[in-house]
Length: 533
Image (cartoon, rainbow, N blue to C red):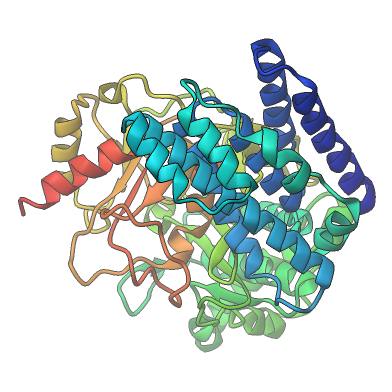
């Protein structure tokens, strides 16, 4: 469907829910539950534009009887709204300004109302009445006052629906192109680019001679790293020529080593998708070996909090790649420092989302039949997996982190390399949480993908040295995929990973990824263990 059709479809669906709720009697719990279910279903639609997604979140906030759940959803809507505001300069479009102002007012009114409802749970009637009198004598003030003195809290939507939630197609249509970018084209290109790059990495994985070099920081790089980076940047430059790119490798060693350069060039020439249209979408083959070197060096952006920037790790987990373990081809798009699209290609992980991690998952891996998976996510759209193919993209499946009824039953992942994460601290944290199962040690962002689909539960990457700073390409894609699958990803202090400070996570130390409902518990255990050092 074109954007106008999509917009009209969601506008109608949204307004139908509002009308049904307005028409229902307040005591009709069945009708209320039906409206809530319809709103949840609308929000779960893969194609829902961002403008409608925020409005639907606010609609749900207005209807949900659970105050805490409503408050959590309002926080999510507010975050998405603030991101959208960064994409529009006030005064450029009056209708977009009106749409943003409408959303802002709705968020503030609902926040005020929720605070008042939460106060009802903790203070007596006299205090509530005094508090309500302090609100301005407006429609929202009257509504809050009425709700405060009733024994049961009235639904939040009654007063707000006509003024705040009537979706007007004029505003929606103007807003659509700017603020509701669903990044579908970016996702499609990223998926195909990573899939094509894995054709090359799989070929090198099976080779005994991987052309290994050591970089200045003593970390290894292979011919697979160079080739995969060239293929991905080539696809990005063809489709998004004005975007910046942060990538791990540079072509200096290839320029100085003709034999190695020729090996990489032969690999790059041979890496083609079997579907001609998909290959064409990526721009087709690279013109020459010299062009390949220039393309590799295009990954020299300094990063930051402005503009569109792609982060590439052509082979994340190079040591795992060399020893025959897990590795991942990683690609993420950041817009003004916020990750919007994330893709992980994991050739050695099982295709099946239901296959749990075991102690052996990280070692003696292969890309035999039944192996090879693409993980992906777009901000606000959920996370998916699909089998890696050699041509067109396979059908996707939605993934979610596994609910944890008992945290002691959790499976937690950590890095194989002791230099990447403090394994002794991880053990002590697991003990504190009552986890008795041994950790699953595996390389690369395959850990992010694994916990996102419920094959594992927790991922701990704990600081080994005080001055160590993580690279953005090691986390951008995986961070988004886990969060879109229902998890939280923070540093050891509980702060979100901040990708807006150049090529590193300068403001963060360590990584803690867990299902949303237990993340705080894990953070408390982490801080308890680290505070004793």
